[in-house]
Image (cartoon, rainbow, N blue to C red; front, side, top):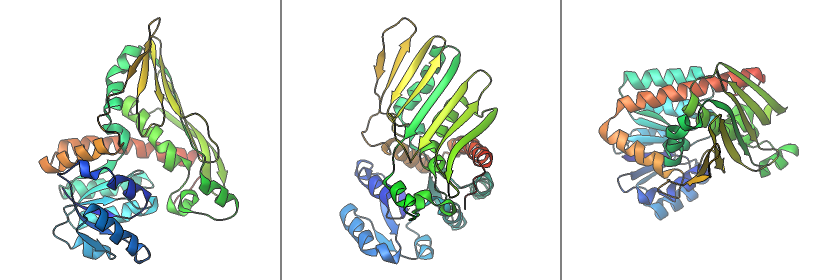
Length: 325
């Protein structure tokens, strides 16, 4: 995979720390704003990135760039992904895929028409621990309750209260607790249970953005609660409770570092199968394979998953009367 990276922010910096363990991925280019150009050149030097661009059109015109990794603020995902697809590039787009299902549907239609890979970078779907939970779920019997809590106090919230609105709390840029933290919980649940029958979002809304909230998803025989918060904190964990046992995931749903499974009347069994300490390793290892083999069946499968997630996002934002973008 010959990769062009869009952005120089925290997610890109984190991504670059593990990319050396995936030698089949070539860092062909990186896109920077003029303001961050010095930082981009530093990343180029440290990680062996081929070219630094400040104009997106120049990066897209580079024949050496085969795939674009969109790691920009949420509000830019749709437009930058669309431009890449129109230029004939495969696209890996950070979560959340887009701000709404309409934008997603347009990208999906374009990618499939041009026979290009379009896929969402959502860590938990590719982690061996999560995939084991998917396999172990029937052992819990009839699943009754799922509870996911990803609450992490943000230093940006202090500034938000002072009137300084950064992207994480800016509705025009697609910020908020649902799109930042709870989105991982949504992917976690939808990847296990599919499309819910009903969606409700009770959000704490300040100046048009959800600083925290409780998302409830109703399934035929299962009730789900997903909590995401940036204005308060609590122990981060998830539980799945069936009539024959339970699974407890310690830590956030974007890393799924380990879990404990307990059958009714049995002893807890700990599981830790992730092969690499970095949460992004497994997804990019899979993306490299998918692009190398042009596995469009897998791409369509993952697009269907992302489509269900975007439908939940639409319903949640509408229920809380939050408008993004």
